[in-house]
Length: 108
Image (spheres, rainbow, N blue to C red):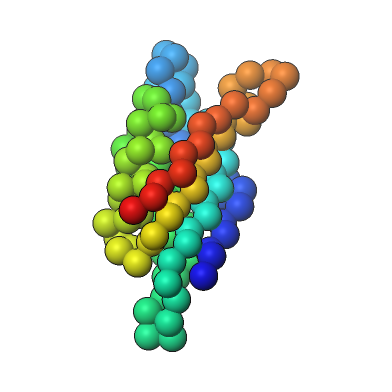
């Protein structure tokens, strides 16, 4: 089974520039989870989205690469059924002419 969460958007403190440490900015997160689904064992996508947002807001990461790594480990911890996880974190407003981001494919 595949769970898709696309364009999860919220504001958080993230970045290494002085203004990024004090002013929340918009981030967009995409998440694709593969797992073995059964009616007795499933992953609630609302819980996944909540954990992503809560982790990002609580940790106030400096680097989006670090955020990506910690999110991957956090999701696997909360949802052991995850077999593979594709995560993308984008900062759409940091540069005027493009959206920047990082992506990682986790295989557990």
